[in-house]
Length: 360
Image: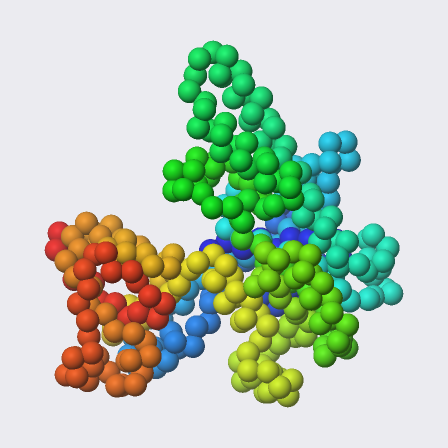
């Protein structure tokens, strides 16, 4: 999964990026073109426990790729998103929009006053204008093609539908499209078509401040589609936690009175917004997590491991992670009749442990 971290300058994007990746990007910006990119392991406790159970030669966690973009600005003349940004977003699956909610006299907000609502509105407007610009240019081309007698009716209809939604300030990810329409729209790189997570970046002194609860409620009221995508994070603290050993990080979190870091919760939110899940393969050679779309048919899930698995798929032998932890081993599960044989259309569930049977 590729997640783009975006926002205005001095909003804490890079701090959040460092917290997510456990690295420091200090000094890496100089002369750099495009975003800073890091691939990190998704430290899933289930993989850790399965590895402890099987003691494999290799343990492979799922991975996420994060891209830290420079502060987003607009071209001064045409009010479009900066061209270098637009060229870099093609394969990004979701955006984390970092919005500054903390005061800082040393690094003042680039727009003067700290105003999260203004920053959200400004950025959403920029995304909408960028997508409208793409549609307008394409519609001009379709109009010419129509005069030449080319079949453009279907594409024109879907683009007009998108245009109408954007003009009413509705993000395209809030619309329902048929599979054929999704396929047609895939090549346009619409920014508002991708899932968006809003990370409200606060200072540690603001934790527990009731004013933040009021701000969050105002954001949810103004932007209902952010209801389950609003994420509050103290970026500086999370960056410090990311630099600690797992043991020290656990003690730090305990002192704060929380069970898991905000970064872990953000990763889970990214999975949920993208509709992704993890299934596992286990054995003496390797324990591995595989990331797939939720409810992907078993045969297609097998294909993520190797195309031969999908082509020669026979059955999938499945047990849930929770069930395996309860009984303690695959042999014990088999003895109790807890292993299931599923066909190629079985929708794989999060936490399934699967042994694919195939013949090529």
